[in-house]
Length: 225
Image (cartoon, rainbow, N blue to C red; front, side, top):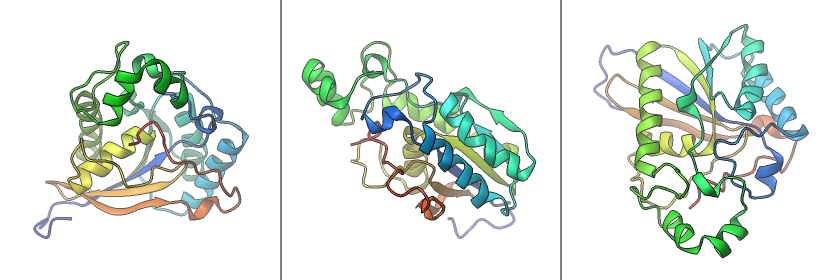
């Protein structure tokens, strides 16, 4: 965080990736296809709500896709808050990658697969998918709106691995084209702060509350590499 924040109110975003789904386990791109949580994902959501029950939260926002909505429900209920939905918090649109596994794409979409793996910022995925730069602009617009709407407050944002990746890069200055080394775990708590001028990293990939469902906090392969 900037040391020159002065009297600007500090706003914290607690970004949470949705719980695990069957497609996560299959390494299948979900993108904006509306996939629900599996049983372990629902258990993760309940544990996340329990973890946050005592936190001083002021608002809960979520992507409007089912897996994010289902993860947000117990969090909002534990704090007596309504969930507000924002389609800008959706996962990246992966175009023709959606519904297909990594192994399949490597075989049948070899060139697009190579360009996706190289993290070309302006490469639009085939089938109308978003480029990284377009995706970044969408996510940045949503997050900046939230911190301006909630100065000095703590806001939960239930979203997707790709959105978390963009948030991490905004908070650390990691370029879009740089390989990812940070985790994007299911139902993890990822905290960034806004000091009125810039985002900064507070904590990342906290899954201490998921000990009751070991092994289920899968890393987001859609946002990899």
